[in-house]
Image 1: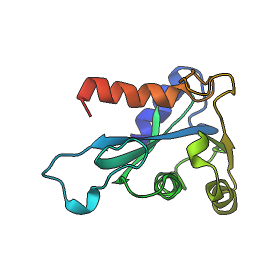
Image 2: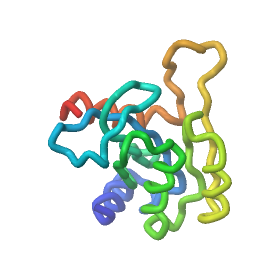
Image 3: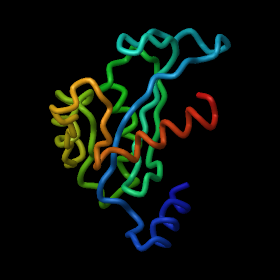
Length: 152
C-alpha cells in the first residue's frame, strides 16, 4: 500500500511522502461473533462495539488505521495508530486533530516523534451544529463513505 500511496501522490503532483496527517475516529457496532475483549460501550455515542482511528493525508489517502475496544480513551487509541506511522513517513511534521484529542497526546507526539499536533476546534458560532472544518473535512468524508458503502 505504501508504494501505491506514493504513486498516487506523485501522479497528482505531490511529493511521495506527506508532511501532514489528519486523525479522527469513529465508534462502530461489532458483530456478536467478535471476541468479547473487543467490545464495550462508547460513553459519548452509546454504541456497543469498537473504535477505529484513521490518519489520512491532505489528499484523503489513508496513512494508518487502528481498531481497538471502544472503552479505550481517544488519546490512547490514537497513540496506537500514530505508532504505525513512525518509520513510514519521513516528511511528516504535523498531525491535525479535533478537540477529542486534547491533552497529553500532543506532548507525547512531540516528545516521541518530533511532530506537532494541531487541534482544530469547532467555531464558537456553531455550538450545536456540525460545520465543515476546512483543515479536517477529508477524514470525516472517509469515515462517512465507509459507513455508507460498507454499512460499517
